[in-house]
Amino acid sequence: MRYRINNLSRPIDSEPAYYEREISKILGIEPSAFTWNRHRESIDARKRHTMCFNASVDVETDRRVKKSKRVTVIHEEPYDFSPVQSDARPVIVGAGPAGLFCAYTLAKRGIAPIIVERGDAVEERVKKVETFWNGGALDPESNVQFGEGGAGTFSDGKLTSRSKDARGRLVLELFSRLAKDKSILYKKKPHVGTDALRAVLVELRRELEAMGAEFLFRTRFKGFKREGGGYLVSTSGGVYRTDYLVLALGHSSRDTFEMLYDEGLSMESKPFAVGFRIEQSQKAIDENQYGEMASLLPAAEYQVTAKVGDRGVYSFCMCPGGRVVAAASEEGEVVTNGMSFKARDGANANAAILATIDESVYGEGVMAGVDFQRRIEKKVYAMSNSYRAPVQSVASYLGREETDTVAPTYLPGTYPADLHAIYPEALDKTLAEGLAKMGSYFPALLEGAVLTAPETRSSSPVRLKRDKMSLESLSHENLYPAGEGAGYAGGIVSSAIDGIRIAEKIIEKEQ
Image 1: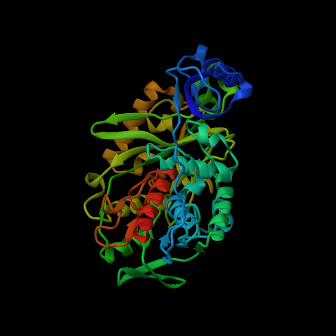
Image 2 (image 1 turned 135 degrees about the vertical axis):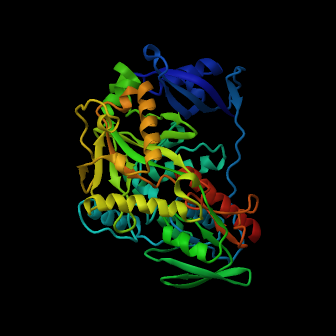
Image 3 (image 1 turned 90 degrees about the vertical axis):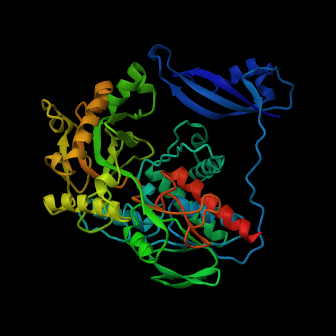
C-alpha cells in the first residue's frame, strides 16, 4: 500500500533522513519495513527561532500501519499513454513549453507531429544570444524570445503554477527525469535554472525525434488556408498539409499576430503589465527572509504587491542570484528580462516591478497593446541609439536621498537616465507609488536597489479566441491556439499543461 503523511517537520540543520524516524513513529513500523520519498517540502520561516522544513511524504509498505488523521491512502492512476492508431501529422507552430508538451503527448500516443520553430535549436540559439549580449548583432529570428524552449529558456526556469490541474505532475515528472533532479518533484517552488533547462531541451528533442516527431528549426510560419477539414500550412521551408494546426506562439510573436489578424482569425487585445527590472543584494534578501539561518538555506525569494487606485503593482518572475538580460526580438528596441542559473549564486537578486494596463492606457484595437509595447521599446532604444539599457537607483527614482547601490548586471551595458521619462505620466506615478508602498513593508526590496528599463513582455498583449470545451479557434475548426502567446497560460508549467490539453483534444478526434 502507498500512504501520504502530511505536516512532518525537521530542523533546518538536519538531513532528510530525519523524516524516516518520524515516519516510523507515526506508522508504528520499523524503517526497514518501508520505503519513502518526499512529496512536497518547503521552508517554514514564519518564526525565526523555530524555522524548519515542512513536508508531506509518500510511504510504501506491505505492513499494517497505525491509523492516524495525518495518514491517507494514495490512489493515483498513471497518465494514459496507450497507443492510438492514426496517420495524422499535426503541425505545431512554436517549440516553447506548450508546443513541446503538445508534441510529447501526441508522440507518446503514436501521433508524430511536425514542429515549426522560427528560431534555432537551443545549442545554436545560446550562441546567438550570448553574441548579442556581448555587443554583437541581434538576430531577429533567434534570440531570447524565439528559438527552442521559448522565452522560458532564458529565465529562472520556475516550475510553479497556480493551476491545480493534475497534468502538472506529469510536467514535473518529465522535467525531473530529464534534468536528473528529484527535488523538482517535491520542492514547493521548484526551478530548473537556465543552464539545466538547456540540457533538458536537448534530451527532450532527442526523445521526440526517436518517437517520430520532426523539428523544422529556422523555419517561419507564413500563413495557412483551409483545405477540406484541414489546412495547407505555408512556411519558409515549404508547404505542409495537416488535419490539425496548433498555434503555440510565444508572447512576442508580433508579426505572426499581425498576419493572423489579417487572415481573419478570431482574436482580441488583452490586459498585460509593464514596468522595470529591480536589482538588489541577494545577501540582503537572504538575511531579511532567514535571519541568522541564511547561510544554511538556498537563495531566498520574495513576492510583493500593492494597490494603487484601481491598478495592481507587483513583483513578477523573481530571479534569486540572477541577472538582468537583454530580451529584444526586433531591431531598434530595448527590452529587459531576468534569469538565474540553477545554482542561483549571483550577487544580485532581481525581479520585474509591473503595473497592470488595459485599453485605458494602450487604446482600442486588437493590436493596440502590441503597438504600445513597440513605442516604449523604440523610445528607449532612441535614448542611446543602442541596445544598452537606462538605469536609475530606486532612491533617485523615488526622490529620496541617494545611497550606494548594487552594480547593474544587464549586458550589453547600461547608462544613467531619468526613468520617469519612459512611460506615460499616470502610469509612471502608479509604478512609483506602488514601489514605495511595497518598500514600506519590505524595506530590503529598495535598499541599494537599481531599476533597469523597460520590462514590457510580461505576457501576451493579445488572445487568440477559442472554444472553452473543444479548445478550437472560434473562427477555424481544427485550429488550436495554445499556451502563453495565445493568451491561455503564464509560465512554463501552465503553458505545458495547456499543450497537453490540446494534444488530448486532437487524440479524441483520432480515436
